Amino acid sequence: MKHITEILDNASMAALSENELNEVRAHALECESCRSAYEAARLSAVVLKSRTQVVVEPSPFFQTRVMAALREQREAENVPAFSRLWKSAKVLVSSMALTTAALGVLTFVLPGTVVSDDQAVSAYSAESVIMGQKADEQLSYEQVLSTIYEDDEDAR
Amino acid sequence: MDLDLARQAQVGDESAFAEIVRRYSPRVFSVASRFFRQRSLVEEAAQEVFLKAYTQLGSFEGRGSLEGWLTRIATNTCLNMVRSSKRRPESTVSDLTEDEASWLEHQSAGDGEQPSVENEVVATDLADRLLSVLSPEDQQALLMIDGEDASIKEVAEATGWSESKVKVRAFRARKKVREAMEKLLGHRNEQLDSAAD
Image (cartoon, rainbow over all chains, first blue to last red; front, top):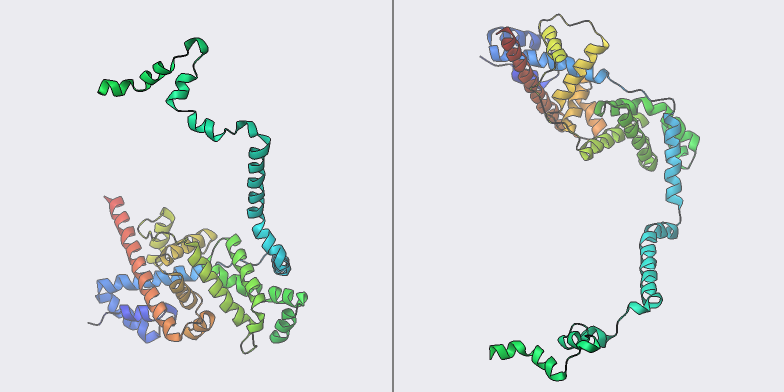
């Protein structure tokens, strides 16, 4: 028994000849799987026809809209090369200028906040912490040394 | 005539290009409607087609019709839009709405319901659901041949594919859609059985 699915898949339902359709129908009466294939092919053809009936018509303003977009496109193409370059580099240049200005402010306008190298190095040394105490709390040189090397002596 | 219009538009005659847009908009919209159902998307695609056509006017040599040339640009532009949008819905061919199940039942029983806007919408939704199992290219081949009764040659001209490629695509698409419909019908039968129990 020759199944008819190939006939169904080979051409649209509308393009099947009368002979082919008769063959399909006759076979579908005897074969259950081909019957459901034929039914599915028939319904598919109906929904596909419906789908192609849905056509959006151009609105009355469509022509105007296209012509406006075309002018816009041509204007964009006619902008000189330097302007286009400037357009793309504008953000980079502005951010660089802003950075330079910020550095200038930090260097010249707020010099007091800058510390010297000596201060920076000694700021956290043990000697400066101890020596920086108030006059009445000041320790002698020997006391300072013994405080610093206290741990070493303990170790010894 | 077409060639003159194209040449005038190419040298910057805006009214000539406006005439091309006016004359061939319906054709371009009809092609775009095969790909999209939403008006905004169809208009967007159609505008893109005409802008592209304007930049390619020099390649129109007048051997074929301007309408055929625009149809090809429209088909390829829409295919690209569909491919890049990645909006292909998941192929859910198992869930049927009540309306769809009822529509299928009437159609299967051979008492096709009276044509109405509601029925057309149901049938179109079903078509989209079936088409979602296909690639955009296969959808085109099937919609043109089975939906619009176009010949293999016409599809080949509109898409730029060879005739054998069109045949293969249409065969494959028809088979997939038929199988998807069989699945839907099987699901509908299951629904009917469970309702009877």
